Image 1 (cartoon, rainbow, N blue to C red):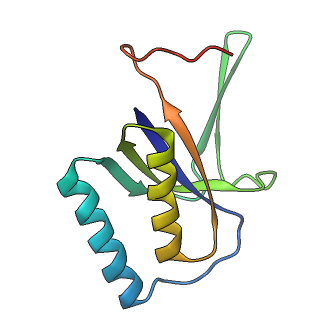
Image 2: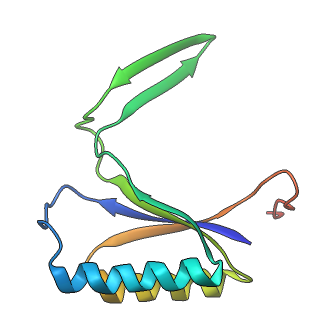
Length: 117
């Protein structure tokens, strides 16, 4: 099972991470990479570009978007056996990082059964 674990930003800037946090996060990422759990990770620009399609017309709008309450600013794509494993990885991440919020969503591909309901 693949899961996208995303960190969100509510607009409150915390500042750059200290050296200890960077070292802990580096070790955590290295561990997940060695075990084959981590498929991809990265940070995302805070503003982005919005693409909308309605009635055959595609509109492109550059950010920032003042109406956005929060935006996804980082992600990790992991492959684990269960949702509980993904949640535990996220718990470990937040123990290192500290305060914040995130979302975990299962990723489906062409060979993955889509859940009923």
